[in-house]
Image 1 (spheres, rainbow, N blue to C red):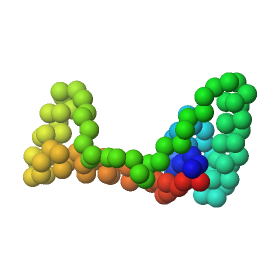
Image 2 (spheres, helix red, strand yellow; image 1 turned 45 degrees about the vertical axis):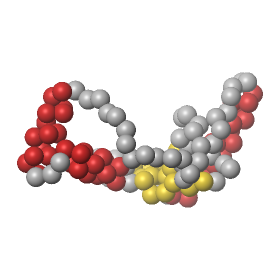
Image 3 (cartoon, one colour; image 1 turned 90 degrees about the vertical axis):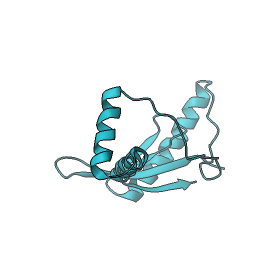
Length: 122
């Protein structure tokens, strides 16, 4: 199994678009390009260089994590400032939905905002 990578697009304030290919298991290992394919191609080259450099330096190379078969319960605890908790509760009430549902919609919107186009095992 190879390391999983994420590919997403970033749009700058001036309208400039860039594609990013990122390897979550290999901290700091990315590829950038003007197109999806350019980012992936650069990411693959950078992944090989990252691993080779880590070996040369005697560092441990993280084992690939299989995100598809990992167990996810759908639950996690989150600590936040009381003022944010209060504001979220007020906004959820205004929307007429539970705090849980409101937070899920905000998280989903935020993830969608990153425009993650693919998560691929290579």
